Length: 341
Image (cartoon, rainbow, N blue to C red):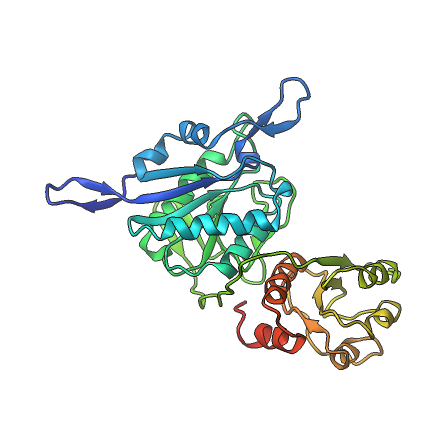
């Protein structure tokens, strides 16, 4: 790929490269094979990543911060809140045109969605990572980094919320889902397809989105768990969680949101909010089936439909809203009328 220099011309006709904040958090893109165990472990610092892809510094003026260097499965909600604060602080600089974040792919969709819910800015925020390390054949880290920076420098990327660039595609955080464990095309945008693509002719967007409703939050400490149901699941886990100090629950159940009777029974007396999502990757849950213990029963119990949210995204949303002391009625109102899908 050709080196790109993007910027405005000064009075002498010289190109002024845009200033971009680059934040590294770790993940496969910063990993390599351990010589003894042959397992994949953290190896590359943020500076090492820049040295691996010198094209980046010919495209923009990069201000680098290494936030962490861990597998993304080890990140916590508090880590992401701290990351959000770093991003907000960086974007206060009028000279910073956008933010590029490297991240492990395991929880990439969750971090992107959480940032999309709590950061309000017209400037592009792009997350990327890799499915293969730099020392593996056909590594995707270099191309993902270059394409991500291209997306940030593209004027049409403004006012699109948090984006994820992987495998030549641009995804909106609200739709992103990791659908394969290690394939290069591991990420999909559920229900709608990717927002755009990047090829040799540039950055191309396919559709527009309404700006996400921002939730202002100072902490992320509300304990919320997820339970996934299968054919014949018992109510043991439900009872255990309801007896614990958990303040909210997400249940990933069947089809349009139908819950079996034996699981429904312990939920009838609970006071904590319970959000219903589907095991299906696409579509949404809503009030349709009238069978006993089906959706009509759920409506009477004032449980909450998560629409087309996956269980992990529903958990993040519920964590934010409970952190704002929202009631079940207020949470349902937010989902039905304020949240953008």
